Length: 84
Image 1: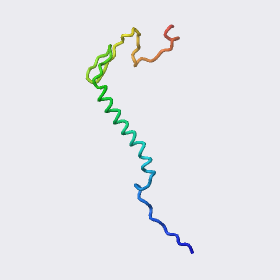
Image 2 (image 1 turned 180 degrees about the vertical axis):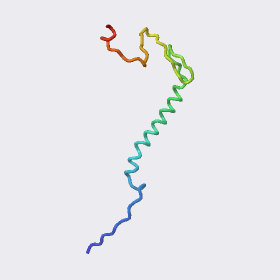
Image 3 (image 1 turned 90 degrees about the vertical axis):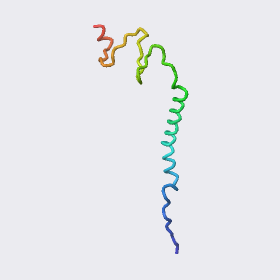
Image 4 (image 1 turned 180 degrees about the horizontal axis):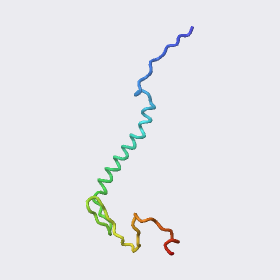
């Protein structure tokens, strides 16, 4: 006669799988925080590149390259349509 005793299930925090699954998002949050701290500590006082103006939180770049750029709200035309 064999006696089989059922063990009570272990609580979730004693199992390894929940911790393994939570490690990825947790490490991502730590990496994000480190990136933000490095960006603020070392690059917050960087000068704006030449040809740009900062107005509040917006940085506007001037077209100094001599290239005629079309506004973003106009539809793109193929080179064949432009020549006709």
